[in-house]
Length: 334
Image 1 (cartoon, rainbow, N blue to C red):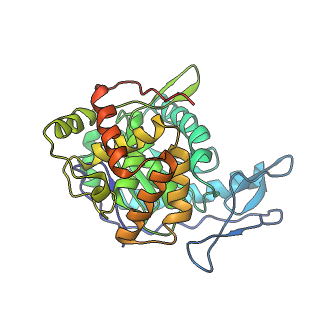
Image 2 (image 1 turned 60 degrees about the vertical axis):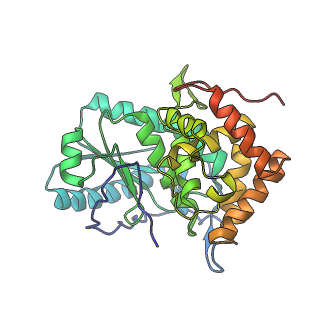
Image 3 (image 1 turned 135 degrees about the vertical axis):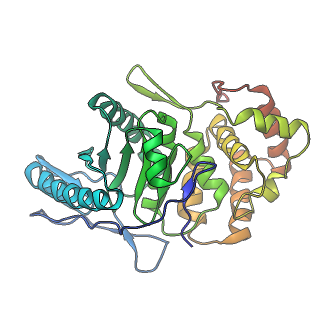
């Protein structure tokens, strides 16, 4: 089953187009692929691949700059034709950092801001959690306004990612957090062919709804607008135990996003977030499904934190109540 990852309240966009296939140009020898646990026949290429001097690795091969530009131009021309027919609108297109194809209907200043935030987020975040080179370009449709975006996608949310077409949809001024949240879904999609639990996918993505870029660096580790709801539920004792929550395929609680998000905040506080994400994606999810996947995730969490899930939950609640809305998290001392 393919899940459409969206922010709360988002209507699902009808899929009218198939994902485009990247064009191939004259290239050097293909990179050596590494077998993975997802399927017996699937192979993935480790990230990052180093290309020879004067060349650039993209998807599966090394390209000269001229050859890469030609490949990307063919990708963009084909995709622009698809989305122009789909929406009946005119888009400008460009690519950045090899992997990102962008179709936009906004000012140059706004698209420059988008490109900057893509760079600031991708460079420190992707290698922290994800092991493999993207096997497809990340496509971003960037509408000029919320009104235009809602009219043509049917969504009232800030943005959404559609796995079937490998495309992220949002609009100018939707906020950097929207971009970063949906990019996490795209990155997970590029690294797995197995289904992950909703608390994992939305918890990890929601963690990046709130971050900051200053001093030309990306700074993570904040609570956000979801946090007051979680605190309210903890105080009212309307809180499904973490042991049950982590075994759910889909979150049953209305405040599930807030709960899942702070679970990743909690891991970040304990300096275990990258380790847990890597263990879940590459060791657990390929081997287990359903409740068993959740049980194994709990065991992994207990081992990493050296305490049982009941003690983890108690500490989770205590720490959650100490933070306010939009607060900077504090990592524990090593």
